Image 1: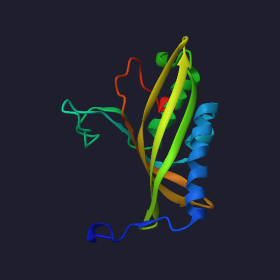
Image 2 (image 1 turned 120 degrees about the vertical axis):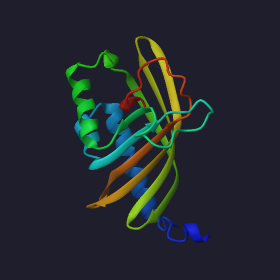
Image 3 (image 1 turned 135 degrees about the vertical axis):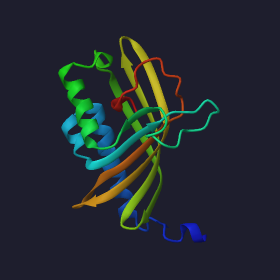
Length: 173
C-alpha cells in the first residue's frame, strides 16, 4: 500500500462484503417496488446525494455547489421532498411513473475510519409511455454502521450515458 492509502483497507471478510451486497440489493428492490418509505430509510438524515454532470470537455464537474448537477441534495430532506412530489402527482415528469429494473454489481468495498466505501457498476432499464430507456454508470457510496446493517452517508452516481431525453429522477438511476 502506498502512503496515501495506508489507512484504507479492503473489506476483510466475506461477511462484510455480503452485508454490503445485501444492503444495496434492498435499495434496488425498494426503488423497483416504489417502496419510498423503505428507500428513504436507507439514507442518513445528513446524506449527500449527488449526480454530477459532465463538463463540455468530457470531465465530471467536481463541486455540486459551484457547477450544474443532474441532481443534488445536501441532505435527506431534499430526497423526502422529491418523493413527496412523486407520491402526490405534483411532478409532471413522473406521470405516468416508469416501471424500472435496477441492477448493480459491487466491484469494490473498503473500510476506513469506521465507514465503508463501496463502488458499484449499475444499470437501470425503464419503460413508460411505451418507450424503453436505459441508463448505466458507476456509483460511489459511503456507508455507516446502523445496528446490524448500514445507512447511506453519501452517494455519488455517475451516469455514463448522459444523453438524456427526459427528466432524470432518483428512481431512474
